Image 1 (cartoon, rainbow, N blue to C red):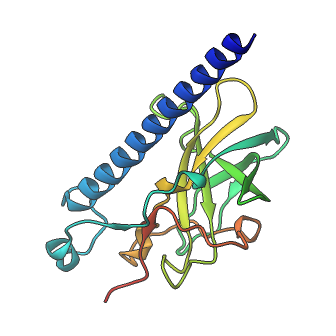
Image 2: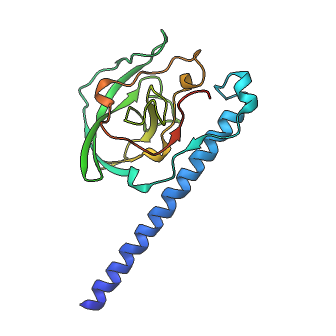
Length: 202
């Protein structure tokens, strides 16, 4: 019996280590791709003067406590509606569900959104959008909050949210862009020290 318990424990540790390595690799890829996007003059939202000086984003140290398994409660009865934005150009979203998770023993809930524009796009079959604000905004991160791109689970009710992949809206770097504003219900009363850092031009 002790031998079986030891085998099961070793298997659990092995799976945990594999999951951790996968998560770290995904975060590294996210950071590299975000840097490459902002360096590419065809894709970058940066103003030309800023693009010339851009080398890389500043990120918080990776911390896997900010990679959480959230319980997703679906809200199928919700309708698409325009989401308020920084300028007149707006897009339609609906509340796909509510994600409930814990960080440092405290429970939080955030609405996650589905884009009407991407609903039938085969490149984004399970795309979900999570705008959020937190207590780092205006000091260590953009004052208007940050965004996360998520994947809806194919089955079950577990939604992986990795705040290490949080990024700033384009309008943080270029006022010509129209960016969704963070809904009041998506404000977190905690500092999320993960993902991209950015306050403004220095």
